[in-house]
Length: 255
Image (cartoon, rainbow, N blue to C red; front, top):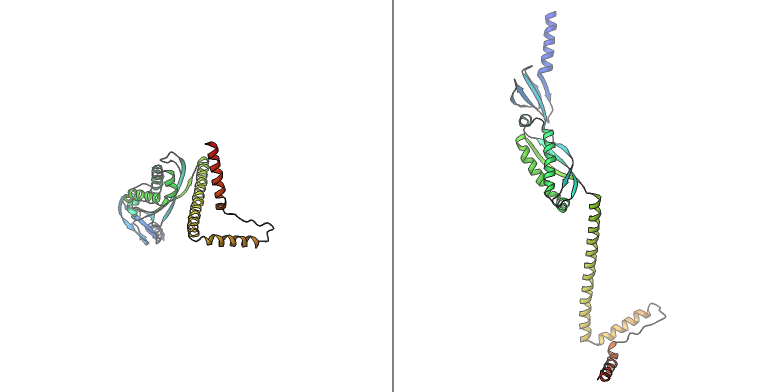
């Protein structure tokens, strides 16, 4: 009876220490007497008690948030930048034996790389060329983590925190830019209007009767508005003889 109980206890101990079940997204790195045998999984895994040791590794995509970093850009502007990194383990054995804690190592590497890359860019590039900065960060991180058996899929800058003084300066710059565009558009409109008026004047000069017709059309438009006052424009050409006579008289007096 005692022997049977001992056998049952030993069998339960063997099953509890020897049998492991891994999910579809998990792999188990097996160490036998301190040496790596291979990575097993998913499903049922049988270990040798006391001799074998298994370390679980998840192969799912990990989203790691990089803490905000104080960065001084190339044009000497102090900003705070944070990012998010998407990576996954592709070689479980390397992820366990090549680095002590790949999550912590990835976090520290991401922080230093973020400060380095953003510090080499100007503020305008940091704000307007995020895709370029993201691609550069992804390439650098992927190169450094390849020996760890980790693949960096994407790096995205989440937020760039500017000082309040810089925000006010950028707002003034944007306002000045909008005013400049408005003036340019207004000038272009005046230029086009002047061009069309010059073309119309050339046509009227070739056909003087068109000026009289335009004059009558203007008078008609004014009378259609029920105005009590009607203005009759007089061409300045009618006063040219008087201007010439007055100018000649002034010159004779001076002589």
